[in-house]
Image (cartoon, rainbow, N blue to C red; front, side, top):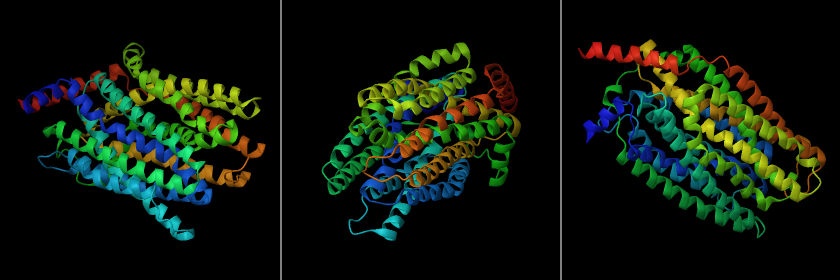
Length: 466
C-alpha cells in the first residue's frame, strides 16, 4: 500500500481517497475561521462590551506574535524527521490546542470585566491563532507535497477549498442562531456560543485525527532543509516568484479582511437587516464552493496566472459596488443588491481559493531547483503570516475607524458611520484588489516555465539515482 501511494505521488496522481482525506479538516477550519472573522469582533463589542479599539489592538497583537509563531512552526515542520511524518505529527498535535482555545474565546468567565476580560480575550485569541498555525502551515505544506503536477495541485487544493467553504456555510447556521439569541439577551448569546464552540471543536478534532490516519508523506523530502532557519527564510525572500506573491497576497488580503470584519456590521447598521446576514454570506459561499469544478478546466485553458488575476478584478468590482448601499431607498432593495454583489464576489473567491495555493506549490518547486531543498513549511509559513498580518492590520484599522466615526453598539448609526463602514467594506477592497491584479501581471512562472523546472528536477533525480 505504501509503495503504491509513493508511486502515485511521484507520478503526480492523487487518488480521491487521499484528496478527500486531505480536504476534510477544511470543514472544521472553515467553520472556525469564519466565526472568528465575522463574529468575534461583534461578540466582543456588542455582547462583552469591550471597546472596538481594544479589540483592534488584541487582533494586532496576535499578528505580531504570528511573526514568531508562523516561521517557527514552518521551519520546525520542515526539520521534523520521524516515521510518522514531518507534517502529520504537527497536524495531529494541533487538535487539542485548537479545541481548548476555540472554547476559551467564546466562554469568558461571567464575572470578568474591564482589564481582566481584555486579558482573557487576548490570551484566547492569540492562543487560537497559534494553534491554527500549528495545523495550517503543515497541512498546506503537505498539500504541495502530495503532487508535483501543475494541474493536479489545482484539483487537490480546489477540493480543499470546497471543504473549507462548506465549513464556512455551516457556520452561517451558528451566526443565525447567535443573531436570534441576541434578541433574547447577552446571557443567552453566551450560553449558545459556548455550546456551539464545544461541538465545533470536537468535530474539528475528529476530522484532524481521521485525516492524519489516512494521509501519507514522501520520505525522500525529509531532511532536505538548511539547518539555519534564517537561511531558509532568506531563500523565500530571494525567490522572485515568492517575493511577488508575498506582496500581492498582503495587498489582496488587506481587502478581504475588511469584508470579513464588517459584514455583520454592514448587515445590521447599513442594510438594516441583521437577521439576513447569514443569507448574504450564503450568497457568497455557495458560488465559491460550487464553482470549483468550473475553475479547474478553465485554468487548463487560460492558465492559472491569468485566471487568478481575473478573480482579483471581479472580487474588487463586486465589493466596490457595495459603497452604494447607504444610498439605496429601501431595506428590501439593499438586501437584494448586496446578495447579488456577494454572489459575484463568491464566484471569484472560488477561483482564488483553488488557484492560489496551487501556484504557491509551483513556486516551491522553483526553490528546489535553485537550492536542492524542500521547505514547504517555510514557504507556507511566510504566506500564512502575510495573510494573518493583513487581517490584523485591517481589524486594527476597522476598530479605530469605527470608534473615530462615532460608532455606538446596538444603536442606529449616523450616515457618517455608515459611509465609514461601506468605504472600508467596498472602496478599500476595490483599490487593494486592483493594485494586486496590476502587480501580478509581472508573475512569470506559468505552465511552460514550470514544465521546464520539473524537467530539470526529474533529470537531477534520475542522475542521483543512477
